[in-house]
Length: 98
Image 1 (cartoon, rainbow, N blue to C red):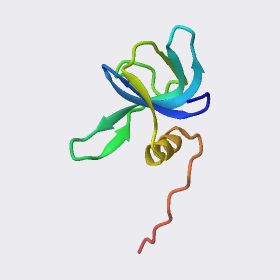
Image 2 (image 1 turned 90 degrees about the horizontal axis):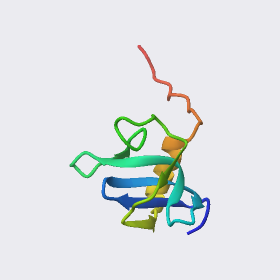
Image 3 (image 1 turned 180 degrees about the vertical axis):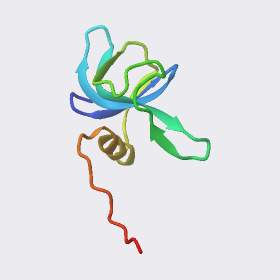
Image 4 (image 1 turned 135 degrees about the vertical axis):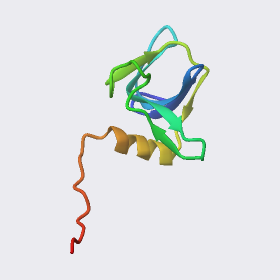
């Protein structure tokens, strides 16, 4: 793994996805646009707008110091993360009104 990779990081508090900005000398990692993964119990998955309930919404970066492991993120999750953190706003699909 290297800077710029989209990774999944598992901690004792949950699983997060973000872009590696820096591996720090104390074995911690700095992620850009970190998002906590949420699940609805029916197999559906999504992202929180941050990493904790009382934290800043849509944080630009976060340092993770204690983690269980870091893994490469599969393409579907990485693409969903990119869409969720993108600044691009798409126009709604037009509808026909009668």
